Length: 259
Image 1 (spheres, rainbow, N blue to C red):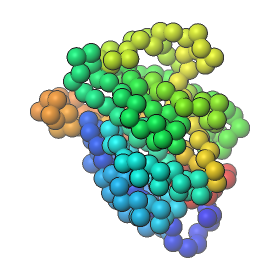
Image 2 (image 1 turned 90 degrees about the vertical axis):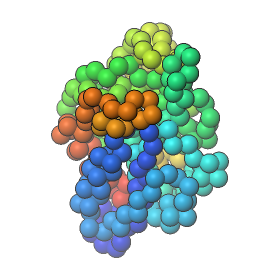
Image 3 (image 1 turned 45 degrees about the horizontal axis):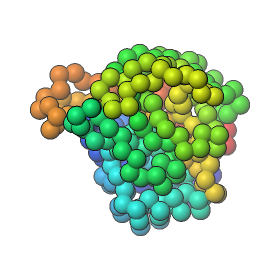
């Protein structure tokens, strides 16, 4: 697979789930995918049609609380290990139990999935502006991306093996993630202090996952059944030029670009 024009490239876009304006995100991603003439894109709402996924060379996902079956988890992991490239966005690593007595819980229900992705979402503080910075100056995916502020969900995640990940972007934060069961993020005594990865590479066999936690979006009707009408339209990082540049580079990476 090459970044140069050439033969057809089959792509699967998985867009589905809860609490986000998936229609908006799907439309935006399809527009970016359409910039590549060779891409032939199949869209599905979950990960269960694994035949379509493994028949292609690129997977792009924007999901929230979509929990793959064990068969789908293993099949997609094997596909990545055999050379597949996966651009995983925002809540792909999330499993949420909403409405528990202590708030939103993040049950550890898919350890294989979390290991393939490199992380599992646990909590986020209330949406607020925060600063995103490069974690390295030595990778073309983030080269020249100046620090930027975004009012997105700041993901506090659990990493299966952080040392195996290649950090690309991060933010620094500690405090309370109000509304979540695991709400206390004030302990910064660990080796990474208050640093939270925003974008990273997770190599796996002959393939890799490129994870970007940014991309929150929500419309008026996306919190049903929690509330029937959500008063605010939220577009988060989708309003940031830097985010669109990162997505464009991510799709070039997925098709085999090296610079």
